[in-house]
Length: 129
Image (cartoon, rainbow, N blue to C red):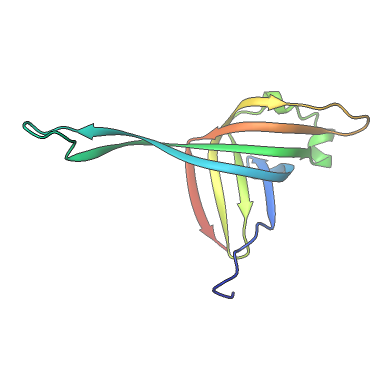
């Protein structure tokens, strides 16, 4: 891969127990962490920052249920403890312990799609292909 080339995402999907249940057209991820200043006697400014827990937030758009998931009657509002996977050319980024926090739907005839889903995840890992 060229040094100047940014690796693109080849696939984004939701899986439950290792089974792909939906594909995603686009996504945005955020990692945040609380920090607390460490004060020292006699100092006007903090001397360091204590790191808190990380929180992973994923906003996905245009979520299409797979044919098998549709046959099984998938309901995005019933999803719990699922996985979101981003496939890059040389690795995967896998978010586990996912729970949805908000779902926005548009209704179109004969289309099984949730427009926007906001998700929080408990863990993030990178897996080489």
